[in-house]
Image 1 (cartoon, rainbow, N blue to C red):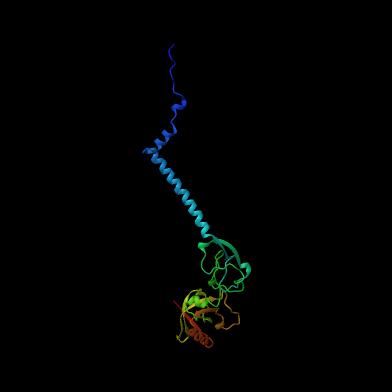
Image 2 (cartoon, one colour):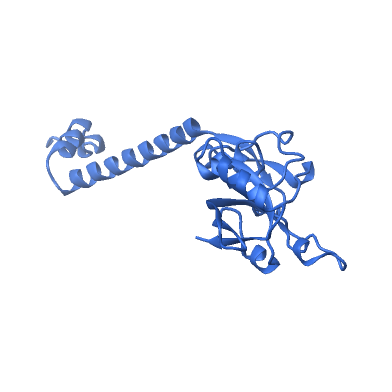
Length: 223
C-alpha cells in the first residue's frame, strides 16, 4: 500500500515570527515606509507633550478688564471693572488684579471694553514721571483760550506751552488728561469755556505755567 503523501500543515505555511522580523529588518520600500510612519508619530507625540508642558509652565493669571468703554476723565467705580483669566505671557506690565486700588481714581485715556487695565491708565503721583521720564515732573492743569484746540488733544500728545505774547513757558509737555465735557455755561466768560487740560512737565516749567495761567491765556503747539 503506497505510503500516504505528507502535506504541509497550515501552520508551516504561515510565516514564522523570525521570518517576519528578518523581513522587516531587511532594507526595502516597506521598511522605509514603516520607519517614516513611526518617526512621524513620535514627532507628533513630542509636539503635543511639549505644547502641554509649555502651557502649564506659562500658566494664566487673573486680571482686571474694563467692563465697558471708559472715557478720559471718568472716575472708576467697581462696576466699571471685571476679572478675567488670561495667559500670563499676554499680560502687560503694571496690570491690576484688585479693584480696590482702582476705585475712585481717574482714567487718563480711553479704555476699550475688555482691555486690561494697567496703572498707567489711572492718575497717580507717579504718572508725571512715567509720562515724561523726569523724576521731578509735575502735573499742571491749564485752560486754553480756544476750546477747539482742546478738543484736538489726546492723552500722550506732546506740546509746547506759550503765552499770548509767544513766550515759551514749557517745552515737550505731555498731555495727561483733558476733561471730556467743556466746563462752560450760558453766562460763563469765554476764557473759562475751554475744558481744562492736565499737562505733565518738569518742575521749573510747571511753576512758570501755573503762574502765567493766572494772568494770561495760554496756547499750545503740538509736536
